[in-house]
Length: 285
Image (cartoon, rainbow, N blue to C red; front, side, top):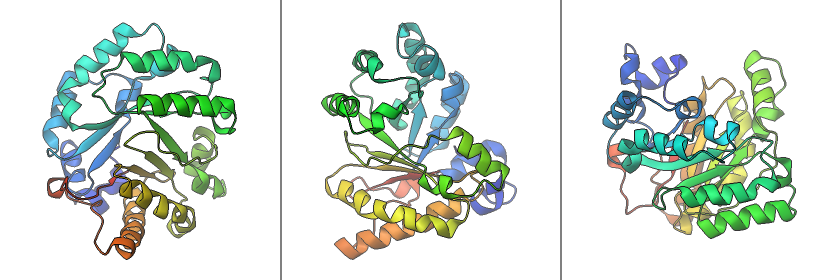
């Protein structure tokens, strides 16, 4: 997401029109998680506007429509997939990851459908899969089959870290809503592709997140050392404080990287300053 009314002062600047928010966002962050596409295929005009609002080094990540992932469960969806990709094609060069978010009822018996669906997608598209069925977190045969499938196809397993938000007491509407909607699943930090992706759902008290984020410091550094390009998406229950949380966590990560390697981490960048010769982390809200 790149638009939030609470970010007018902290991110966009006073008086920034809503139509210019993406451009302002892209001056600070180098990637963004696009949720709009999950609910419906965007219009061609929106796609063109998004493409033109950001620099060449900025990277979107888009979710496939829920019509494909949830209603049809990746089956009998050739027409819907073709239409979606046609509309989104102007953004191919600026999209770093296409996310296949699967519902909790998409279980081990449907892995064949996932395999067949992945085989239909253009091989040049970087893909990520987010699962929510409990069997895929039980460290049993179902999870091993999923991980093997993703490894064989070089598809990234998206990692949800909701520990921080579930550690928060349900004393606000935003936290209660997050507890109802976010999956409470174990954190299995595995890289099955070049773009390991972490969705960190933070605690509303910003300082409380540091302990939860600490294990990610070495893991993210490890992935960068392996010449992978991780994506890190930062959220809070209502996302009002997400920019501040992202900045504080990035500073922790940059300090860890500099302590290990003696140079700053290319992560929290102006999009046009990104240098493909340096280690980079996609950081977003």
